[in-house]
Length: 437
Ligand code: XLS
Ligand code: NI
Ligand code: NI
Image (cartoon, rainbow, N blue to C red; front, side, top):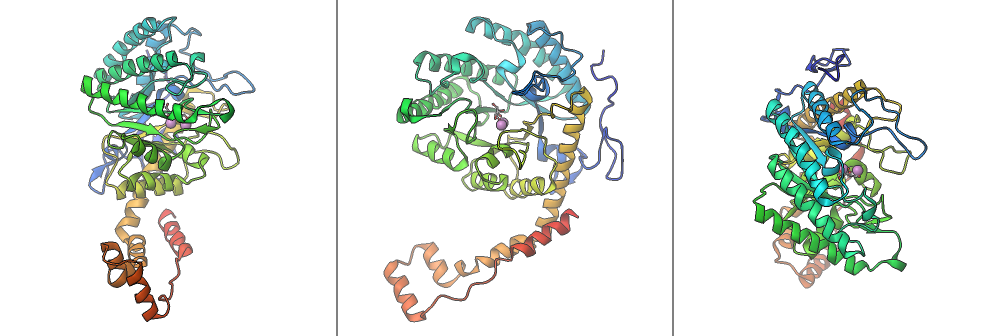
């Protein structure tokens, strides 16, 4: 039985093809800079959006047409949905998926019941993974939807909620390990605050760090070897999310002795909500040795919240791929489409169009970035721009052989600094356009 009877297996048909159910650029076996496209991207489908997104918004209920849904939130429905998910991923040709515990299985009345529900669905997930070869890029726990998490999870004023969250992460981590998951993600959920009149900021941050230390201890105890990833986000649902951006996360992890235990999962729409470009966030993470994985999506320039749209902008994908290629790939990480179709795109086939377009956009971005790197003009420009640091006084400052007195003596003798040279931003923007066009 097929849940997508009208959709064929998506194949690569080349840049000239007009078939909307085909790739024009994503050619999984094509080698770029020594790796296949499959290896470069390790694309993943986000279970929460693609399998659980209903199209509801603050003004109305969901209107997505999902013929396989029976309207219940039962374990049987959850198990059937796994078959739908794997047929979708097989037809699309993605090697990975990601989930929250509560996306795949319904929450029960007690923790024990919820764990049993999860186990019942994990069995089916395992079976489908074995049948298809599709793997789990990362697992995570939903510590934000249930009303018990109203004040946060690890940063809640209610210690019992911290304990509940710990138990939930313990189980989600064990399930991720059981399924061969390659990473485990911590997105802050409701870890943050709206108002300091009712908030003990110091205590909440200490508790947050305590929670992460306990998670690391448990990881070691059960022998889970994949990276732990924190996913920065500046706001939404709270006004001040504790994992604001890459720099905030790096400072937090360093301050609490966690820096060697975590990397970051950088999401485009979170970068832009923080007032940064995706390229900034990726670069900041990368230079700190923290770039672990990517949640691929985009925001809307005209709307100020997390719209989680599918990325199709070639400037964006080119910039992302420049950073990823510069650091030699994402290692155990990958590109997870943390993105949802618009409410108006309510048919099942729209899920295919969305993923196809984004995979193609990244494939194009990869090829463009590789060409820019090969031509070398951009990297040579940057190297030359900082040339004053390679010899003379610059090299001395970097090597630590200069101090304020020697720098003063140097400048008193020289009289003035050497003339500056243009930054040539527009010339470099034109260069990128040349490769995109
Ligand atoms: C929400 C986050 C979330 C994480 C996983 O904004 O992007 O979807 O990726 O918990
Ligand atoms: Ni995300
Ligand atoms: Ni998000």
